[in-house]
Image 1 (cartoon, rainbow, N blue to C red):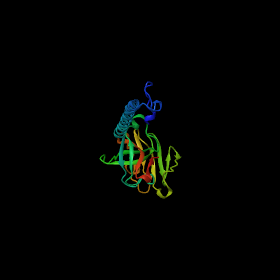
Image 2: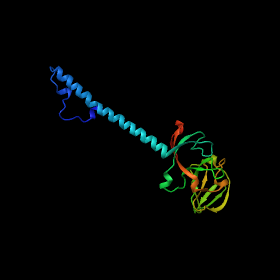
Image 3: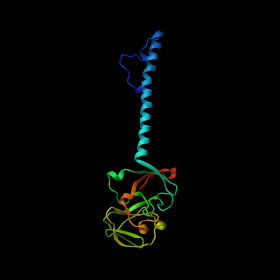
Image 4: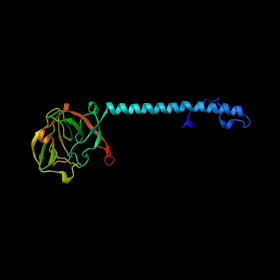
Length: 205
């Protein structure tokens, strides 16, 4: 990359030196070496600030977490490592189908990860495993047939500032069907990206 560093116009490049001028060659070589140093320093400086920015972003905007359990199969596997965005919901609303991390309502010292199914004010019911929101059966491509169950839930209206969440592995998930909708202030992050193991790397959808 040193060849792209701008040189002062008055400097002489090696290609312009007379072959018989040894002292001039040494001076020119010295000049070239001096010209390369600022470029190297700039590269190191840029690398340092890029690394620092990455650390700050991960530290203050994202949080690494580990999945424990299988209620979010098939997308999230037990022991998957992923980043959650801790600040996104300060600027945007929680949306249906978001995968969120929240403090467990019955024990806030624990954290759960589930998918948002219904929003505040939504009319919800579940008939033999089929979820209806506002009177319409919703499509759930993230729930394979083998992971569905036949549980039902009486019609309800999601209270203000609360969210109905469910695990994708319906037949084993402990979710809002058991502990009710989750209060907004318990939700503290959105699952964004799995970074380990390599076979699971990718955006969480």
